[in-house]
Image 1 (cartoon, one colour):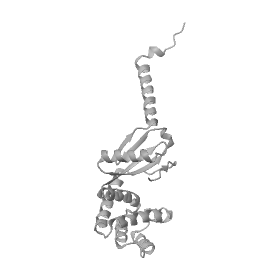
Image 2: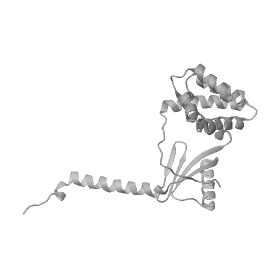
Image 3: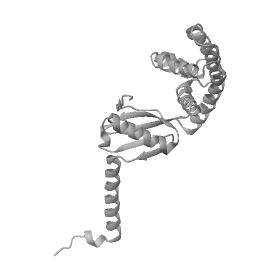
Image 4: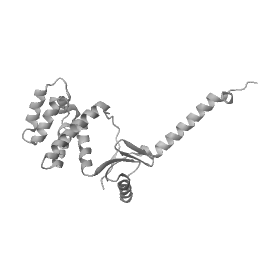
Length: 213
């Protein structure tokens, strides 16, 4: 069973709709190339390795890719110098095309979407699960079997332990989120109490007026 991640406080950049649409176009183009290669999975792994082993380890390198002040010709030269002898021809050509259109700053979402497309091709579905404490092997197997029957596909679980949930579980499949956490139920109860109190104050103010003798 995969070892669950522990939640760490962090600020994440959320893509807007336009960026996601653009990234999806390039991810689809990448998968079109990958599907024609001898080993589709290897090319997907190569893109992931470039993002995690190069961009993450060398932030300045990623800054160059993201900068609008650096020319395409310079970025293309960097790609050749850094990856020319190591990367596949398909990978090099893809990066240069993305660079030519000024979209190297979207490599991370492109990778994310490409992995989703590849998983779909293999009949797999990424499922992100948040729990208050680590699930035992039996519970994890039961959850996977239930999701398999519900989704009609093979779920790939990505489990994160988040003590803030108190109890229960949050399951996300694509854009769908199923929230059965204790934290959320308590928050809903709190909001209902506040809303009810506000309604009474507004409609029956005499109940809250002090009567002077």
